[in-house]
Amino acid sequence: MTPSGARRLTEPVLGVLVFLVVLGIWELWAGAADSFLVPTASEVAERVWHVWPTSDFLSQVGQSLKRYAVGFALATAIGIGLGLVVGTSHAARRTLEPILELLRAVPAIAIVPAAIIVLGPGDASRITVITFGLCFPILVNTAEGVQAISPEVRDTASMLHVGRVERMVHIYLPAALPSIMAGLRIAVSLGLVLVVVSEFVGEQNGIGYYLVVQQSEFDYPALYAGILFLGLLGYGLNRLFLVVERRVLAWHYGATGD
Amino acid sequence: MRQVNVAGWLFVVVVTLLVEAGVRVFGYESSIAPPSSTWRALVEELWSGSLSGKVGATLDAYLQGLAIAIVIGVAAGLLIGSSRTLLAASSVVLEFLRPIPAVALIPLAIVFFGPFGIAANRFVVAFAAVWPILVNTVYGVRGGDRMLHDVARTSGVGSTGRLLRVTLPAALPNIAAGLRVSATIALLVCVTAEFRTGAGGIGAYMERQHFAHRIPELYAGVVLVTLLGFGVNVLLRTVQRHALFWAGEERATQ
Image 1 (cartoon, each protein chain N blue to C red):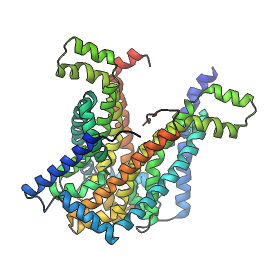
Image 2: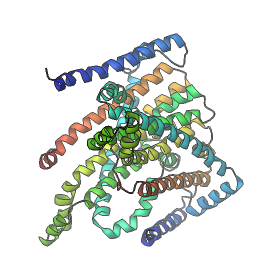
Image 3: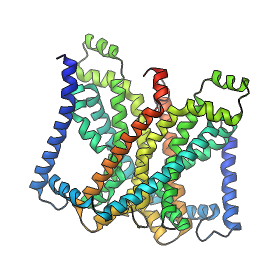
Image 4: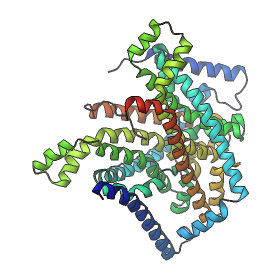
């Protein structure tokens, strides 16, 4: 076997091995500390087994996922739409830049109370917060992608009298797609953060609310189980997105050769 | 010195005036603070000291958390980036920890560090901020020029010297790009933690105003924290442009 072939085999094994060692250290350390604050890995695993399949937990997850999906879809539409406008028109960019820079600097938690006061504590206020936070990375990446299109492409399009809408849909959008996908990739992880943030205030339901309840009821293994779930959910969503991205950008990889 | 974007800032003023008029004409004052009342509340609360002291508490947790993240992120990134074995060894643990949304750790941090004081906030800020810095440092190190390394080695520069004098400067543009991503997410996490712990800072202030239904004061907090975030963005961009003039603006890898 060649050295690089051996490497390809041993490297994943090494990663898993280190992970198991860390888990083992946690198990021994938590067992020795014997503190109610730090459950052992096996206690958490047992809790995961009992908590995750319950209808209460699954319905909280369902609420959160619904908000995540709707917020993500709205932010994608708004972000790409505005990004195309800002990216193609110099005047629009000049005019909108300061207000977008200011709005982008608003930490999403800051608008949660205001959203709840205006829209009530239901889905509308949470989705507004998620959409608000997610549309900026998408917008910025769309605009940058459009701006990076070579002048030759722009000039050719205008010389051939391609209509404004057609130009957007058939030229600018595909050309900016790799950059747009980069923005969406940021949004995939950020969305989960915003879901939890939006559910921390004016408690009703959702996975963020679930965490708060476990904290106040001192059920720490369940709290760990909830956090673990969010981590795996984030990992799964990222993986899923990579698959979609590879599909959507297959032509791009083919064209650029990487 | 760049030219001031007159049209853009004029647009901000116009939008502010439109919001003011809209809220007053349609009678939404009981649920939305018009900009004029927000401004008055902001000035009063800053003057009386009930808000100005909060800025210091927020900055305290925020900057300390960021500093911890920079030290850990850069150090770990340099080590992991320069050794294939370490990269492989740490990959599963890091892939496991990284997707955990830092805000989800807030309830746990409250339990661990107690609800009072900034220790809990500092911890979650550091956890949130460390990943973009770490990942971008690793990319910066791995993307570095092998030739520079070999030249340094043949010139008799030791491995520590190579790490600090060749690898680190080469990775700095990536580290700076990662830091900018970290700075934004860390502020969100910091204010959210304050909101939940109530341990002082602008987040705790806003939580109290929300609870007391003092809407102009609540909005004053939003404006202040936004200006803080805006200031941090401008500062980091300026530093990046001047201190790392050779690199241009490096895009962060997520």
